Image (cartoon, rainbow, N blue to C red; front, side, top):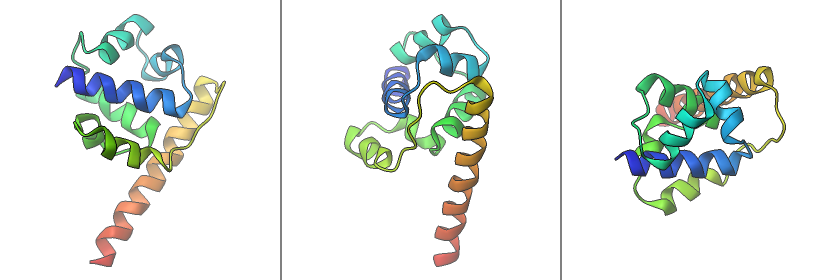
Length: 111
């Protein structure tokens, strides 16, 4: 499972236009620790996964997705940005979290 999570972290990070350094800074960890999560060498703590999900604007479950096609379908609407400061990344994360919750509520109300 660590390999799947790592692969998905890398895909989401690259598609979002972030460097490992920027994501690590956002997560308040070292770049080498983050690199170990992406490579599947270490298991990423749940708290860090939740924070990464907010940054990438996705459900936590997406990190566990083994089908790359489903992962790519989620990325079709990804927000891409480059050269963001740590403060900018927190703002992007907060915005994506609002959008994600709005979409969940829309789905619930449509039932």
